[in-house]
Image 1 (cartoon, helix red, strand yellow):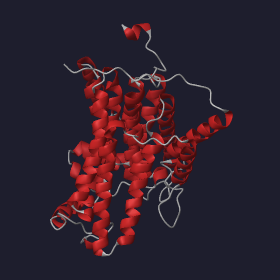
Image 2 (image 1 turned 90 degrees about the vertical axis):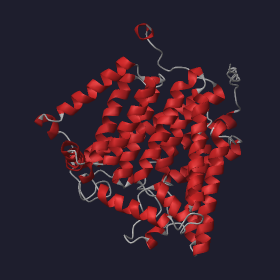
Image 3 (image 1 turned 180 degrees about the vertical axis):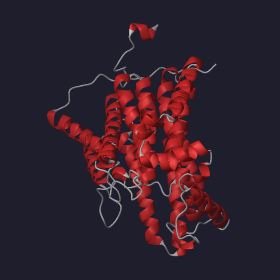
Length: 429
C-alpha cells in the first residue's frame, strides 16, 4: 500500500523589517502587472517582440534577485523534465538554424521561448497560496476587461478594420489576433471553473464572468476557440461532476442549442459568430467554417516537408521560405518539427510532460484533486489549441497555462489552501 506522506509544515509568518517587507510587496505588485498586461500585445516595441508585460517581468525578476526569492524548482517535481525538454527543443532549433545560415533567427526564437517558458515560471510559480490565488484572479480580471472592451468596440462602436477588430468584424482584442484572442478566453474558462470548485471564487461572481468569456469567444468568430473551450469544459466536467450533474449539464447544453433557433436569441449573437461558426454547425459541414480547408493544405505540406527534417530541421522561421504557400503552418507540432527537426519536437513534448508530472503528483494527494484538474484542463486544452497556431512563444500563451499549474505547485509545496468561501450547511449536506 502506498504510504501517504504528511503535508509539509508551513512555518508561521514572522514580521519582516520594513525595507524587506516593502521590497516583497513591490515584487508581488510587479508580478501582478505582468499577469494583467500579458494579453496586451498591442503595447510592444516596433523593432522586435518585447511587450510592456515583458518589461514588468524583467523588473520583477531583478527585484526577486535582490530579495533572494528566486525559486529553483518553479514546477516542483516536473521542473527537471520541463527544463530539459525546453533546452532540447531550443538546442535543436539553434543547431538547425546555424547549419542553414539563419543564426539570427535561431537566437531570437530561442530567446523568446526561454523568456516565455523558463523565466515566467520563476515569476509566477511556487508562491504562497494567497499570492497564487491573487495572480489567478488578476488574470481573470484582465480577460474580463478584454471581453467587455470587445463588446464595446464590436457591438456599440461597430469598429471594423482597426487594431482591435478585423475587417470582417472579428474581435482581435488586445492580442491583435482573432484566433489567439479566442484561445486566451477559452483557456480562462477551466481556470474560473476550478477556482469556483476550490471555493476560491464565489459562484455569484463566476457565473457572469463565464458568460462574458463565452460571449467574447463568440465575438472572435473562432471555431478553434469554441470547440477547444467545449473540450476543456468536458474535461472539467468529466473529473468533477457526478452522474446527475453530467445529466443536468447535458440538458443545459441541449436547451442552449435549442434556443439558437429562437429569432430573438439569434439577433443577439455576434455577426462573425453566426457567419463563421453557427452556419457550419447548423449545416453539419464544419469544413466550410473558417479556414479549415486552407489549414489542412498547409498541414499536408508540412508532413511532406517534415520527411526531410528527421534529424535536423530547416531552421527557425524558415518554413515560410520553403513552403509553396509562403506561410508558416498553423500547427506548433508540425512547425517545430520542420524548423528544428524531430529532436526539437521531442523536446517540446518532454517539456509538456513536466507539467503532466506536476499534475499527477498533485492528483495523488487526496486534497489535491481540484488543483490537479485545474492544471490538467489547461495543459490538455493548450495541447489542443496549438494544433491551430504557429509558434507559441507569445507570453499571452504561457501565462494562463502557468497560472493554471500554480495551484498544483502550491499544493505540493504547502498543502491545501484555506477555502476563502467555505461551504454552507446545506452545501455540506
